[in-house]
Length: 113
Image (tube, rainbow, N blue to C red; front, side, top):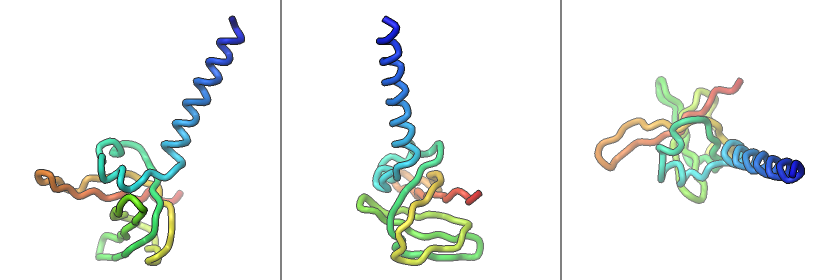
């Protein structure tokens, strides 16, 4: 009986580890973030794609990151990447405004430690 408990506990631990790795280390599709931003409003996520444009204003630096599922604006404090550069960004989802069905969603890059 004890051996079966060890096997079940091992399988449960492996399943939890797999979910953790999937949620925190594999990039989240941008389309998934845009389609259901509430699901991603807590915690840190990673997204990956190609930089499609970039801009620097007085107090805000941002670039747009595109993958095969969509495109999102990434706000950053770091040096802006080059257009066409492929990169992975870690950070959080922020809703900038909401008016009826219209909403602004950005991805705020976490500072590098």
